[in-house]
Length: 391
Ligand SMILES: *Cc1c(COP(=O)(O)O)cnc(C)c1O
Image 1 (cartoon, rainbow, N blue to C red):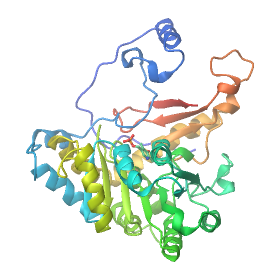
Image 2: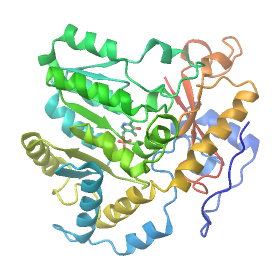
Image 3: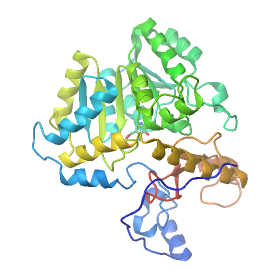
Image 4: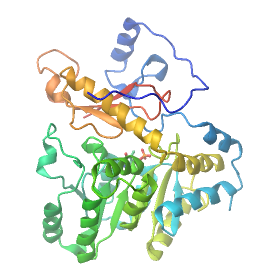
């Protein structure tokens, strides 16, 4: 079993934790009805809920916060963010939003509607909710093989190309609003998607004149896996791989609370003029003017810096390796985990370990799937892990 590595950073600030007793935690859990979303964070010693927006920022990000330009329009911090994101995406329309789901609501609100269909490797839960809210339908098209949680595949987050072709024919191309590739594939265990797969999806979209959206919350992590596992990429930088992925897509939706390395923020980026203008109008109505979209200048400054720092090879290597380290050890102890270990999280197959008759509060029919997330950054969480239960 490979070892983990030393953190490629120093910690210069600490946030005190309240030390609690086991009986205190038991009481808190009971009061919360065993729903971790209802716990007070002060009662949680190791916070296992999610890595979304929970990480610490770097010294450069904090320095950037102090230099945030809070002008209403045309702020320096906006220009900085726009430049960084344009370089990454090559797209003309860069819309800042307060979270990923705000970007989703704007885009899918326009593309969706009754009778429309969205096809994806896997729709993340907020993606599916925003699509279904418009009256449209969302279909997940994972290869059957990938549904075997223990099978080792290098790109277990891929979409099934044959299923995609069949779905387009079945629903008819004119009803397909978009194909969405989620990288990494969060709901399927944080598993990566190969460049080959995205390229093939692009070809299929071209053949049927369909729009391809990249849900790229974890685009840097996905780039890491492509460089490590896919032929022809070992000499490319992580940024170059990310740019290549984005170059194949028409739109980019991102929760910056993931690979944006900030506590709050999102992005919606588009190539098409007409759609770009429509989304811009909706942004102004619901989020904010085009040069801040519901974010403070300092938030945009931190995001611009985070989107650059996330491609640091030492950081990415540490992040992915330490996640795998945790997962490999759990597996060795006999805990059934989604294999191989994904990028940001270790996913535990809870149904396998919860005894139906154990009297456990999460037993039998109401036992959902439990996820163990690695927290976003080092003291940013050390080797803590997050558990998230969904029903
Ligand atoms: C987190 C996430 C979202 C939603 O982003 P929020 O910032 O939480 O609104 C969408 N898609 C994927 C794949 C995500 O991981």
